[in-house]
Amino acid sequence: MAKNKKKKNSFSTRAVRNGTKRSFFGEHSEAIYQTSSFVFDTAEEAAQKFSGDQEGLIYSRFTNPNTEMFEERLASLEGAEAGCATSTGMGAIMLTCMTFLKSGDRILATPSLFGATIQLFETMLKKFNIGVDYARLTDIADWERKLKKNTKLIFLESPSNPLNEIADLKKISAIASNAGIISIVDNCLCTPALQNPLKFGIDLSLHSATKFIDGQGRSLGGVIAGNKKLIDELKKTMRFCGFSLSPFNCWLLFKSLETLSIRMNQHSQSSEKIAEWLSVDKRVSSVYYPGLKCHPQYELAMSQQKSGGALISFELNHPTSNSALTRAWRIIDNMTLFSRTGNLGDTRSTVTHPATTTHAKVDAKTKKLAGITNGLIRLSIGLEDYSDLISDLDEAMDS
Ligand SMILES: Cc1ncc(COP(=O)(O)O)c(C=O)c1O
Image (cartoon, rainbow, N blue to C red; front, side, top):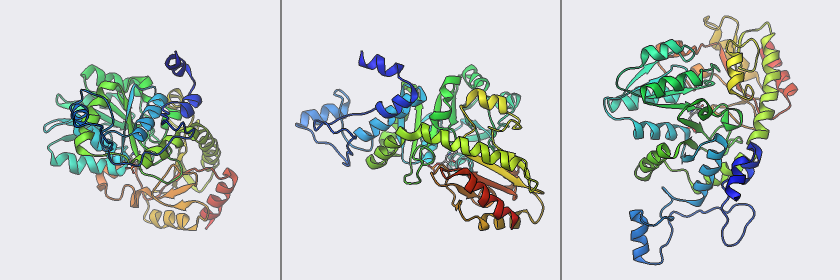
C-alpha cells in the first residue's frame, strides 16, 4: 500500500521522500554511515552474505546505506527501476564501457561530447581494442549509417556540452533497440528535473552528479539509472573495479536532490533572460541555448525537456579569426561576478573557455567537428540575480 502510494507521488515529493532509510534511533534527517565495512554476528552469517545466500551489508565498496538511499531516490526521479552511484561522472562512463564492451567491439558516439569523454574513448578504450565511430548528433541518417555489426553501445549527450545541440532521443533509442544494443544518454546538463531519457526509450541515463545534482560545487560524483538487469550488471563490475562513491558524498548528493527541481527551474529562468539578452547583442555572432526560439532544434528540445537548462554558450563576432582567442580571454578576465573555473552546475555562475580548457586535449580535427572555436565562451548560470550577471557580461564585453 505504502509502496503504491510512493509510485504515484509527483517529482518534488519523490525528491524529498523516496529512498529514506531510518536507523533504530529514528533520526529525521538521514544518518551518515561513514564506515568501510559492516560486522557479522557469526562466521556463518559472513559466509552467507558473501555468497549472496543472505542479503545484507558487507563492505562499502559495494554496499552502504547512503549509497542505496542516493541510488534509490535518483532512480525514482529518472523513472528508472534502479541506480548505480559512482565516484565521478567519468567513473560512470568508464564503468558502463567496461561492463558492456569487450575487445573487438565498437562504440557509436558523437563528436558533440564533453572533452574528457572523447579522450576516454580515443585513448583508454582504444588501448583495449575497442573502436569508436562518430555520428553527427542531430543527423539521424548519420547514426544509422555509422552503425556497424560489432557496435555494442550508443553514447551521446543531449543537450551537448558546450554547444547545447539536441538529439532526437526517440529516434536514436529506436536505432539502438532495432540493433539490439544499449543506448546511453549523458543527462548531466538537464538532470532528471528537466529531462528523463528513459521516457524516450533510452536504456541508461548517466550523470556527472558533480554538476547540477550537487549544484553547489562541493562534491564529485556520478550515477547511472536504468532497468534492474542493466544496473545489476554495472554493480557486478563495481564490486571488483571499485569506482565507488564515498558514503559522505552519497549523503550530500542524496540531500541535494531535495532542492534539485527548485534550483533547475530558477537556473533556467535566469538563463532564458541572459540568452535572450545575448541573442540581440551586436558584439555576439551566435548564442547556443535550447530555450531560445531561434535555436534550430527549439521544438525538439521543448518536446524532451521541461526548459532550456542553465548552460549558455556564445560566440563573439569572427570566432575563428586570429584575434578570437585574445578577445575571448580578455572578456573572461574582465568578468567580476562569474567565477573563472572549469566546473559548471553551481549556485554561483561560472565562465569557461572550452577550446583551451575542457576541450584543450581534444585533437584539432575532432574539436572542429565538435564546433569548438577560439571565440566560444561557455556560461553556467547560477542563482545570482540575472540582471547582475547581465551587467557583468555587458561591462566585460565593452572592455
Ligand atoms: C557532460 C559531462 N559529462 C561528464 C562529465 C565528467 O564528470 P566528472 O567531472 O564528475 O567526472 C562532465 C564534467 O564536466 C560533463 O560536463
